[in-house]
Image 1 (cartoon, each protein chain N blue to C red):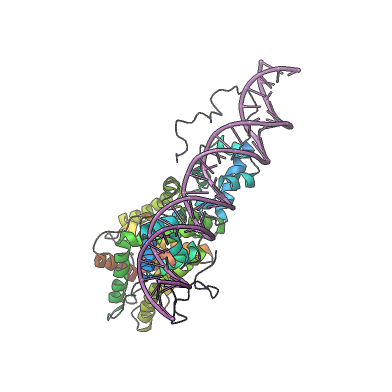
Image 2 (tube, each protein chain N blue to C red):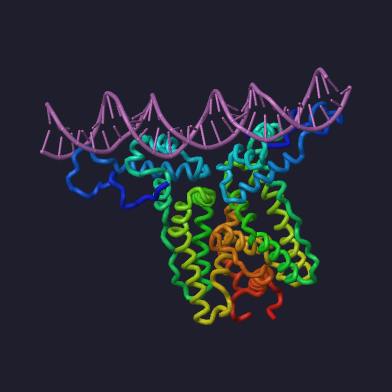
Length: 213
Length: 213
DNA sequence: GGATTACGAGACCTTGCGGTATCGAAAACA
DNA sequence: TGTTTTCGATACCGCAAGGTCTCGTAATCC
C-alpha cells in the first residue's frame, strides 16, 4: 500500500516535458474517475467494498486508464477525498454567538446532505485499513473547520465575552461531537440549519442549569 | 447473511436432550473463539478484514468448531460483541450534577481503555456492511447508557434543577458526542475520569458565557 | 503517413475470503 | 468394545477483489 504523490512515480509526468509524443491524457477521464469514486462512496458502500472495477465501470473508463494515473486503489481514494474540500466558513460576525451560529449552520447544512454524511461514515469506516485516507480527510476537511471554531472561541475569551477558564478544544468537541454523533446514528436534525445551530450555541453559551447563580 | 439466535438452527441444541451421545462440545473452545474474535477486533482490524480463518487460528480451533456453533461470520461477531456488555452505571446521587458526573465518569473510564475504543471504532467501521452488528451494539451497549443520561436530565427538569425548555436528547448528544468524537480521533483525555466528567458536567450546566445575564 | 501514446473493454492471474467436506484422534455413552 | 459426536487441521470450492496484459481504436506530433 503506497501513498500517492510519492517522488517515485514515473508514470505521471504530464507536466515535465512540454513536448509529449503520443495522444495526451484526457482530463475528462480523470475527473470522471474521481467523480465515480465519490459517487460510490456517497452511496454508502464502505471503503473496502469499493472496487476498482466498479469505479472504472461507473466512470466509463478502462482499468488501464485508472492505473495509468494512480499506482493503486489507496492513492485513488485519497485523491478522491481530497477533491471534496469545501470553502471554510467565514466568521465576520460581531459577537461570539453570531459566529458560532454561522459556523455551526454550515456544519449542519453539510451533515444534512446525505451524500456528505455517507462519505463521512465511509471514511470513519476506513478505520485502520486506510490510515492515510482518514488522516488526510481529517487534515483537509475536519481540522480546518475545527480550527475556525476554536478561533471563534478564543477570540470570545480574548474580548471578554466568554469565561477565561474554558478549553476551546473541549467546547468544540461538544458542539461538533453532538452533530457528528447524530450523523453517525443517522439522526441528524432536519430543521432549518440556523435554528439548530442557534439551539446548540445558546445551550453551550448559557448552560442548562435553571438558576444562574 | 443471517443473524444468530434464529429459531432455524438445528445444529445447536446443547441443552435439549439431557442425553447427548458422543463427545460433548467444549465450552473452552467456545470461549476461546469469542475471545479470539474480540482480540482481533481490539487490535484495530476493521470488521470486514477479520476472517474466520484468523479467528479459528488465534483460538487454536478448527473452522469446523466455529461453524458448528455459529451459522456464519455475522452471527459470531454479533455474539462476540454481546459478550462485551458491561454494567450500567447507577444514578443514586442527590443532584443532577452528581449524577451527571457519575455517568460521564463511567463513560470516560470506558473510553480510556484502548481495547474498548478500538472495538467501538471497529463497530462504527462496520458501517452498512454489518448492519445487524452495529444495530445490536447500539441496542445493547450504547442505548442503555444514553437512556440513563436522559433519565438524569429528565429528573433534573422535573425537580426544577434544569431549565424546562431543554431537549435531553440534544444535551446527551453533546456530552457523549464530545467523548465519542475524541475517541474516534484518538484524543481521549487521559486525566482522572472524575475530573474530566466534572469539567463536562459543569460546562453544560453553567455554559461558557461570562455574564450570566 | 508513420510513430507514439492514451483510450475503453475485457481476458487473465493471483490472492484471500466464506463456507463445506474430509481426515484421524479424542472423548463421551452403552 | 463399539458407536457416536466433537476435536483440530487442512484440502477444497466458488467467488470477487486488486492488478497486469492484450486487444483494436483514437488522438497527437514529426
